[in-house]
Image (cartoon, rainbow, N blue to C red):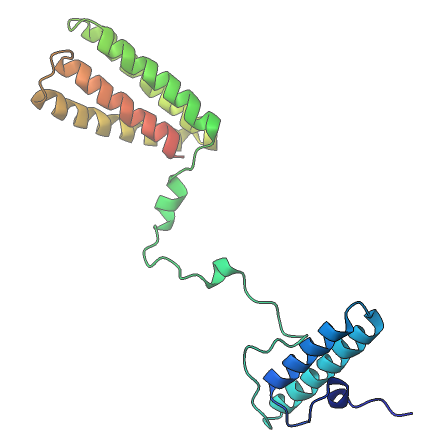
Length: 205
């Protein structure tokens, strides 16, 4: 006994459209309900028709709509790969320098430099030597936190130096123009410097 024609199993003609074939398959599966053997036969007939038409398409004899899914077609690309990539990307050296800190890498520098900031503001204006000592401890803390991440002594020392000099210069400039009743110019400089060292410790590696 010859194998049944898959078109006949689906109840469509050989010139039926893909929409008609899919509609016939859905209708048969719905009517069959829980009949597993018959449902499997319908699926096999449907796959046979698709495979046959895929072969015809590869031979250039018919055009198959792109929305038709063939069994051997590769899985679609993940959504993330299909999304447009940002037009502006950070240079490699900058991307390698910036860090996304974990909780501990963010917590401890925040505690250390917050304490330094509070003590700096609490000191009387004439205690500039103490401020300088606090800043020296802040520089040491920044170096420690950076070196703990990458274990690169020279790199950590260089980044700490750059951060300290830059933050100190900004703090001195602000301290010379800002007039605050509760803080002297030296205290403003110290607070800005601690803030720069904190940001470097957390977000640079």
